[in-house]
Image (cartoon, rainbow, N blue to C red; front, side, top):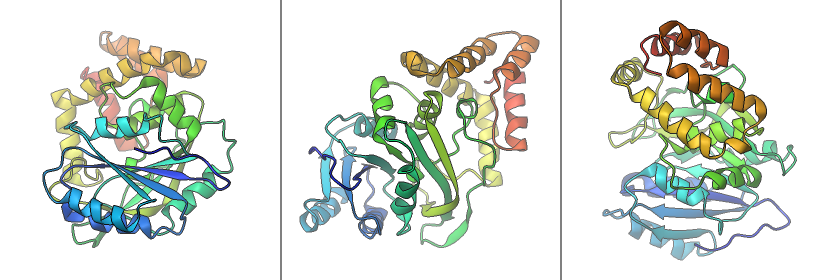
Length: 313
């Protein structure tokens, strides 16, 4: 990968993880190249694809040699790939955006995010994320993702991610925080981790109620939209199986690595939440409530209470 230095106008490093994405990859890259905000470089980390992904990428590099950089490495994990990209110190720019391999970006996606992020001093970590337009494999609109109305915060981030990675754009100060934890941590997802770190370390988080991305649903999605009845039932099943508790264990362990970077308030919330999880029923319920953690919707908070009651948090 090549060094991308900052210049007079803000540069965005787009971080894309690819694994056997040939089916939709060209359409995604095209939508990136058609962005109204032109000051970007696309970094692609290919997780050992065995389809035509590399050939598709090679053709785009041939036509856009100064816009696209490509590296292939065996990870077998999309989260690890994104962590390797965001923790790569040679990728140096003003702003960063995660990109999946199968979505479609609206032309104003980067423009809207950068205009908002530029209102914040560059030494303050800041994250932009938004709703998505959920589409099927043929790019036909299904629905909008849920609208979250409660304030983004670390107390929310500990138990919920409000922004898909495919919507996230953040600044260099935020990237430096992510670098401190490194790429070898074990966490459920890179986007949830990004929300936790930036909100927990005194950064600002903006949630855009408008959508600027078409989030494609298909039979090969590693992570899909979560606003259908089927998705809610699947989440309940995962909760009962202990998946949420496992994810909390991973997140708390990773956060302890950078605990000195957390604000005093975030440290208190983290320690109260972590302590409550190991207690018997009533102290667990009281301690979890005292920590202040919350989800964005009434249904989500009922689920949070149930998880706490069943010791699945």
